[in-house]
Amino acid sequence: MPDPTNKMGGDSAGHENALWLGLRFPLASLLTALRFLTIIPISWKSKEDGRFFQASLIWFPLVGLLIGVMAAAVVFLGGTVLPPSLVAVLAIVFMAGISGCLHLDGLADSGDGLLSARPREQALDIMRDSRSGAMGVIVLIFVLLGKYGALSAMPVATMVMAVFLMPLAGRTAILLTMAVLPYARTTEGLGGLFYSADSRILGLATLFFYALVALIFSWKIAFLLLAALLVTVALFSFCCFRKIGGATGDTLGAVCELTELATAVVFTVSF
View 1 (cartoon, rainbow, N blue to C red):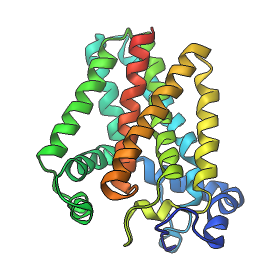
View 2 (view 1 turned 90 degrees about the horizontal axis):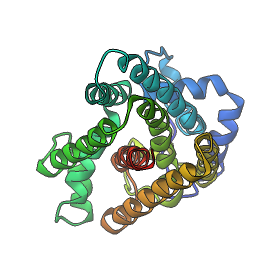
View 3 (view 1 turned 180 degrees about the vertical axis):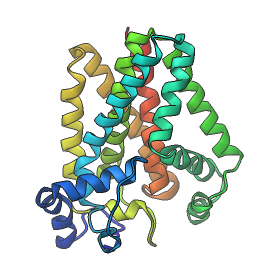
View 4 (view 1 turned 45 degrees about the vertical axis):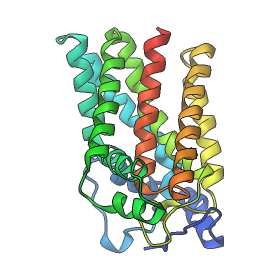
């Protein structure tokens, strides 16, 4: 398993392990991304564990699109027999379930740590604790209610478009946050396994890809979606930097969920 880097930039080995390794072994790195970001059962030789973590980042947008396509199909089919309010619940459950609730768990842990009155090191310890406190539960409820409120206010046709883009927006936010924030922990953590010298390049490339996909709706919608993503990432990154000095695996999950919420809100007010 590669050693995680706790700062932006990494080293020459990290550079090769990210872009070059991902391009050299596209199937292996893609399967690693699928295994990490979804509950899709993928068998893997134990000796390969961790080798392609950094390389898998180049496939995060594609996995986001895959989740979006599946979520859109769920909404489309559900909308033929269910009212929009229940379809919204179905969409939220599917998007959370397909990722094993990984990002929701990060959101809850981030709420506990970032909203605590404790100093940096203690806040990081709180976020590492698997138990959820009051702040984490409150943040989780608010974000899920926000998603439900936004999605249930849409006609099913609009909801199909929203859930198609939400997972891509969330995974784009993860890479963009990694591009602007260093890894906050000085000890090994899950998020640190993905940082490399190519974090900034991957973040910018993914943002460009997201912009191209958003343009299928319209210039106006694409502008609003990009603005929502950038504002969410900027504000949350500022809060993370002020509180803990960077990002962790939990805060990366949190920014994914918050960006999905912001994306849903854009669709609600734009259609």
